[in-house]
Length: 487
View 1 (tube, rainbow, N blue to C red):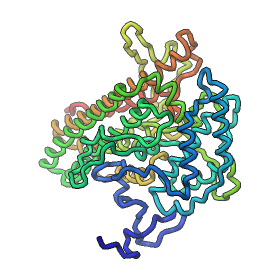
View 2: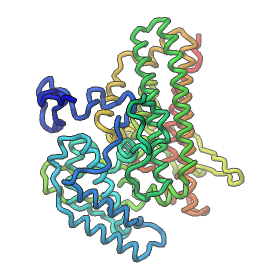
View 3: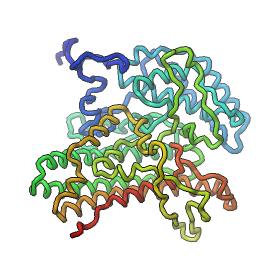
């Protein structure tokens, strides 16, 4: 195969985001950057399995992560933590502090290397943070992690913390490689995935991440349907409306299948194991139950570095796929509202559980309230930058689907649109149930049946009041259903 000339645009190295590009220079940070790094076969996931290891120049990082995993480090707040566990964690943290500060200059030439570096360094940081003794109210992240991690983050324009992309989008491989000459069908590969990196090495943790990866792959068809609907919206005649009606019905079916994939997490991930053994590892600073401060040592070594302000952990709210559905259906102005649960004013718990049958009895939805940037909007800062650009592009669509449906005198089109929105609402129904099963109920069990309500509401890994947030988003999504057109 003939190689490309060095001046061909596909041969250009990844541009440094802080160096102005010459006019007309294409963004070649990835092969699909001109398409917002959204692949026609894998959607927001990369078209090839992410690399599982950095080159030898950064082997010390990989070896340090390997050591943490193979040493089976335990959470510092684990009940009954033994002295051996504490000493093993202390030795590992000492080895991290003794690492040299490796240069990231060569990594800047490759988006793929930057992604892996972010994953490895963030994983090391979370191991470091969550094995630090609970008596230490300020957790000092050592310079050998701080400096390269923040430099990598500056290039990727991501926060220095584990994100959904680290756990899901760039943390997978095929169990069995698909046939090289075969047609790649995403929904046929849903159960042909495994994870590269895990905190616990357990099937429960792997299935938790893979449930989201399967939704991402299944959502590829939704992205294709969005594209053809937008094409038809450009024509906007009676024939186009009939086609859009059919496509919206198909889209509803895809979202319903995504709901099933979300619910299937129960088959491989035990709620108690998740809550007590997995979830604490990827908590961010703003969901630290003790309010401990993360201090990034070594900022003075690179004057371009700034103190991080975004330190939420990975969250399903960082899925570009779900945001794309919201924006495309015109639901985002409802679902991306602020929600404020006035728990102090409530005389009953946030979630009642009828123990005899295990039925969840949720409270009325919280009312939207003014405040800072809505959580789902803020979570876009944790997405890969090209995916953020895709969402902005989708939001700027001059022919919004919801406006088209509202303006059309077409009952079938309106019903198909509502079917798609209802499917999204039902997806969020399932998310509410998952949050109750995996966070609320285990938290109540951990606190004890007699624990007072003021003991604190369980937070999601993104720092929100988990149950009230997902329930509020679900209820606001339901409010976006148009219903039959009135005369």
